[in-house]
Length: 200
Image (cartoon, rainbow, N blue to C red; front, top):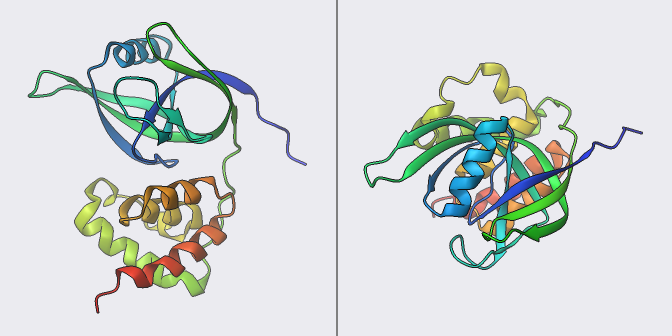
C-alpha cells in the first residue's frame, strides 16, 4: 500500500473554474488578500490551492470551496493594461481539504492532504478518437499545448486532463473529472460525453 502523503497548510483561492495537473491558468489579482497570497508564495517559493467554488463568489465574502483542488505554482507575472497584476500559474498535485480557516483579511487557508501523482498509463486503442479530437482542439483552442511532445498523446492522464480543460463542460463535470483517480476511467467518461458536442 502506498505511503500517505503529508498534510500541508496552503492559502486557498476559490475560483469559478477547475485547474488540472499540468494545466495553465491566468489570473487577475486585485483584492488585497490575494495580493498578499501572491507575495507570500513568491517570497517562499510555495504554491497555493485552487478549488472550484461550490457556493459564493470569487470576490467579497470568502466562498465555500470544493474539497478537492489542485496546487498552483506561479510561473510568470505581468502588468495588465487595466493596471492590475496578472499572474500565470501551472497546476501541480491534487489535494483534499481537511480543514479551513479564514484570516482576518478574508484569505482562506486550508490544511490539505496531497494526492500522489497518477501512474502513467498508455491510452488504450479504443480511445484513439479522443487523441485525435484533442489534437484538433489544441490546434484551435490550446496554442500553449502545440509544442507538447507526441509522447504526451499516449499518456491517458495527460489526454484526459487536457480534454477536460478544452471541452465546454459544466463545472460539476469538470470537478468530477478532477476527482477521478483512474485515468482510463476518466477517458471513458469523456468518451460518453462527446456525443453531446456532435453536430446534428
